[in-house]
Image (tube, rainbow, N blue to C red; front, side, top):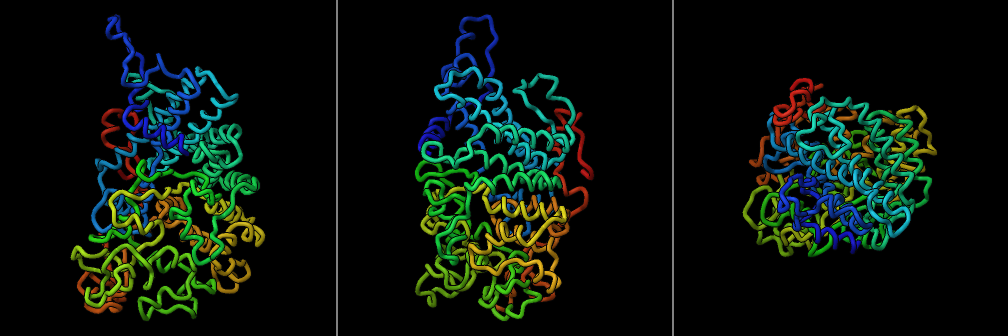
Length: 558
């Protein structure tokens, strides 16, 4: 990891992010190689240069931005208007900057991968096989970028060479999404064949391994209903015997602990995360902990009633069926629930970094303990729009200070692989109790939750597809996957519903005037939402891109 972090800092300002093109001029002066950027004439000579180039490509992978994408789903509410929030609510134009930025940035990053793959064979190896291993890592990162692009826009240009702006190939039409997915699955298979199976450690910590490539393949295959492919890829990862779920040995803390500094790859305790954006104090940091419990403003990420209601009770039944559930008070909502709920969402009595909560300051002798949500801003405590707060991903010591969070951002976890396996088996009609016991029930064992049992589900009129999707929702919350899952399940109507919060009567005057309320007395915190099918299942092709290349065309409804 030290080498990766060191190289990232070296490459912070000067890297192959500048187009890698040869200078073509008859002037001796202009023919001189620039000294402040990397160009083909002097680069691609050594393995060390390749490693630095790959490190720069790693630095392009989404970091906290993947968590920001939670605002496109219905698990999480951001207090003010953001472009991701607008996209999730279905109310945005084809000219919206994020729609164009994602397209431009992803293709910029893909071009950098293409430059590497066009040139890497020229370098002299010091370790046999190193060049191909590095190239395989780049191919996986390129596949990750393309997986975002085709998810957002559907049919897309599939560009595999570092083309120049005047190259005619840049102005061709889009490849069918099916062809893009075919390419990605083939690409990830070929990369997996080269990559090492063991979890990278030491100076290679955080690098892509065979498991990363196969897990990404499983994710992509599942997204496009290639269930047999997804099942096989997930099972390959499971059969490696390399990965296992993170645990502290205590079911009350294991899940939450994974998303703190204790769960960083550098800690040496995490054999669950197959791919993460690494962070290091005073070198590469982010602001997630503070944004979740910001102590003097509105909390940036807050759970919704929809998410809170999705957690099962400890008896394995949903809240509408379980005799253990009560919503008489705010505190009651958290009782007798799947333990992941209270390891994800702040509970009265928890330590927090939000300072003064909703109680009068005179009645709050210890601001480090949360008891009551705060609905009005006075600059002395964290305000919530829904009445709920997250604790997942929060490092308490990082909350008071801006941009001082070094928690890793987890992109792909072994937990997702297990969920993918179970869902793929179910969608093929092959799911057995043994499949659940080797997948979803391992996740439940980690936190001490009642097993998912096929007979129990049938006896209680519970649909297995609904329960597997519920399991994915609560296990992966705040990891940027919800929006993508809702769309691939064709459950877009969820995104068009109002966003609700707590029951106002729980807090009397504290919440009575904060927002409008629905007929049941729950706060309604966002109501201008819509979802139009098939329009909102894809983003529009950015208008600026169509202006440059009319052959791209536009997606349905836009």
